[in-house]
Amino acid sequence: MRRMRKSGRFVGRRRAIVLPAALGALLAPCVQPGFAAARPPAKEPSIAVPYRAAELWRQGVTGRGTTVAVLVSFGDPGIEKFMAEYDKTYDLPPADIRRIEPVGKVPSCTDPGVNTENCRAWESETRIDVAMIHSLAPGARIVVAATPVDETQGETGMPEMMRALDHITEHGLADVVSMSFGSPEENFRDPRSIPRYGKSFDRAARAGITLVAASGDHGPTGPLRDAPDRTHSHRVVAWPASDPRVTAVGGAQLHVDPEGHRTAPDTLWPRTGAGHSVRFARPAWQHRLGCPDVAPGRSVPDITMQGASGTSQSAPLFAGVLALAAQLHGGRLGNVNPALYRLGPLGAAAGITDVTRGSNDYGGVRGFTARAGFDTASGWGTVDLPAFTRALAAAVR
Image (cartoon, rainbow, N blue to C red; front, side, top):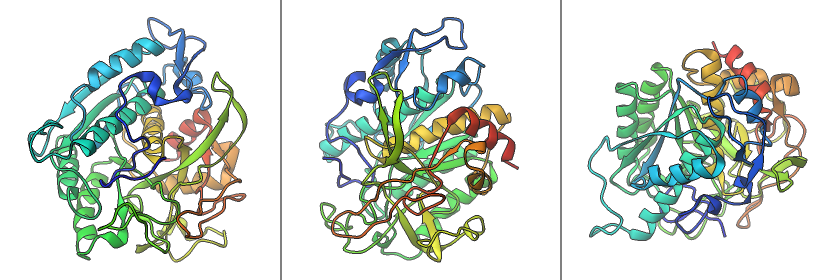
């Protein structure tokens, strides 16, 4: 069963991942045409197949020259070994990984005072994050920024996450930052917390860094702060996904054959986080949305990606998409939301693929239903990778 653990991240699996095959059937190898590199691969993770990533790779668009960072608690000291095996399995070029500990030495999962189960889950999260980015943008460098404090529901561990983001910003370490964690806005007891943390997003925005975050794995609700195994009895959305400076990524369910080719249109992943913020007003780029379920607050998500392992899979996948678009653009993209909402109404012409089926009721709370055009459940839908990356690269101002 996929659910959020006691920590605030959105974890799709309850055990640590130790082998590439454990990432699931969507990562099974399949034969594909050549890769734009010295040694073309014979195989690729089939998560890349439905997004038609190889079409870009053959043209040299691999994310080369860009860097994607992931913010995680604890990280994974074995990430290089894991990815070396992953790359060997799928004949991908070696992952360019840099691990940093910008706010203090990270403890071992077996050190005194460390919740070993949560720490191991962060190792699993780190592996999913890195593998998903590398599967779509194999030429991008990946920075794993690990903090020594477990990020949990509410504010514990969040200051360290924002300090790590500031370090990335100050030292120019990334073009895109992916965040597979979050907590319902109502779980922040201090009303000054979110605005205070948001200053880090302002600094990242001024540096042109693009921020993406998972929308959550509890449909229209989310875990209670003091009882994370239970959920709110009403609609809530998670921060940082609800922040307008962040692109919120929800979950879609891909229907594919054993080789990864689509057999039917994507549908909504039934537990994807979606809803409306009570902390942020609807931003200007959402003002003209005509769907009936858009409330005065900022609507979440903006876009969806494969979420079979939860939206903590979706966010790094979209971060990989952004690395490809940044390479095409020739530089950082900054906050892509205004451009995304200009492209949305263009539909297929801009590589936007509508998600029109599915809903996300959960925990007794009525959710939202996907429908034609923009909707709260799925945002604009999902992407046709070659067309979308080119359109986004051109649309960013």
